[in-house]
Image (tube, rainbow, N blue to C red; front, side):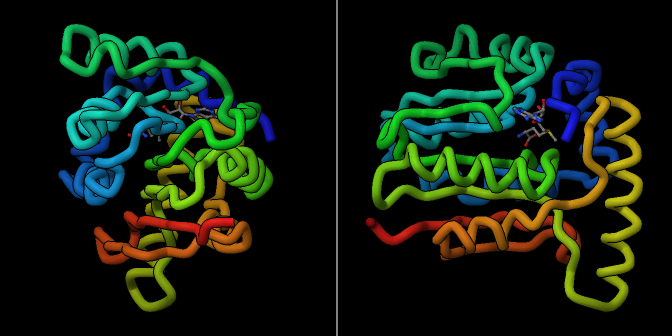
Length: 218
Ligand SMILES: C[S@@+](CC[C@H](N)C(=O)[O-])C[C@H]1O[C@@H](n2cnc3c(N)ncnc32)[C@H](O)[C@@H]1O
């Protein structure tokens, strides 16, 4: 799969405005819905961080945590670091410009992870690789926060979701060089890797889901 997300830099400035124009505050709600579940964490991995909004809110929610933000777009990293610089959290939040698919964190190095509107930038193989490598790095009892687009099971909501996804993938492919054009089976892949969904909330008539996954120790 080509497309590492580096092209997202072109959108960094406009990303928030575009999101609000298309979906109002619903993506923001989905993104932040379960951040409190990581409040007791010490080391959090935030993959596909974006423009710094997730890092800022997560740093507030988890005040004793160090947060490693990984994003393959230098433009997004620059915007995110500017948002965090000068805040109380600046000393606890680190940025790494890298392709999340090639990360190999040491076992037990994190006790929480968040992928918020990130896994849908990958294909099934990319998601499987991130889930395997990240899963191996998480301490027992860790939570995985997830937010992404999805296609509801039937009815008008399904048609609407398909139409939105066609528009969104066409737009992101053209604007960022994104190398995929369909949603990966992210929740199924997490399930196959032993993760169980323990909480979830849908937004936009089921087009967007925010969820928490956990995995039994061992
Ligand atoms: C749709 S944006 C979502 C950003 C943020 N998490 C949010 O909720 O707004 C996807 C982000 O993932 C990054 N990205 C895409 N592919 C990536 C990859 N393979 N490795 C790391 N970051 C990637 C992009 O640069 C972009 O910042």
